[in-house]
Image 1 (tube, rainbow, N blue to C red):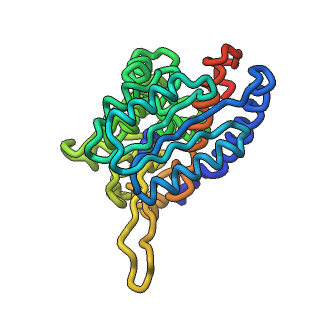
Image 2 (spheres, protein in one colour; image 1 turned 180 degrees about the horizontal axis):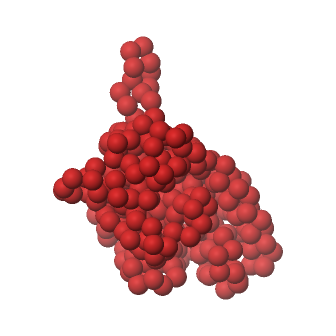
Length: 298
Ligand code: GUN
């Protein structure tokens, strides 16, 4: 079998086109653009590239982008004050504080300070709690993007066995909640799970989010399963090369021989994350401005 490739790049581009249409309608109704603020603390080059890409796509979709790049040495008080300022700013509908923060900062306290109505990352206790309760709210971008790809490929997920590998608050836990809400039978596997290959082998849906290059082998995958690879890992450079190859948490070549469909890395889940961030910001904007948006429109 040769697996179908799930083209996240194309899906994300289609989603952005729809977002741009709804952003234009929002602007007409609200008399202002929807706005997304991104806060980045420190000098991590990859994060700077990522934040620049977010800003560019936000503007390209007809929304306002507010970028706050703070020095590595920024203290807790200054960061909390910035969050307060963004919470109070009527032009800002969504606030994303890029994680991880430098070690000296209390990440949880910063996240908890974000107004849940502007929590486009879905990480505040309010958003997390609403997701667990099955109430509408803002959901973390990467798992929501992964779910969109799954539903596009499979239609109904009801009754399917899903294994999520990884239990992070950004991906694994919310992914499991989303799959449960779709009536999957969900297993969350992690570093202490026994017989991981056997656990994975039962699954119709595998979501790998552990950050270990090519850990999931083809022999672990049930023939015909759909595999979502959330990992983005850079391998050490080959001799003479400046940079190593990007690979996911799944051995892609092996998975292609067993699965029905697989997301590639890059070009799978990655492009979905920013598109869903824009979607979340626009959904928040409608709510914050009291402009109606049909359920499931975005
Ligand atoms: N760092 C890597 N991914 C993410 C994300 O989705 N949200 C935030 N805030 N930080 C990240």
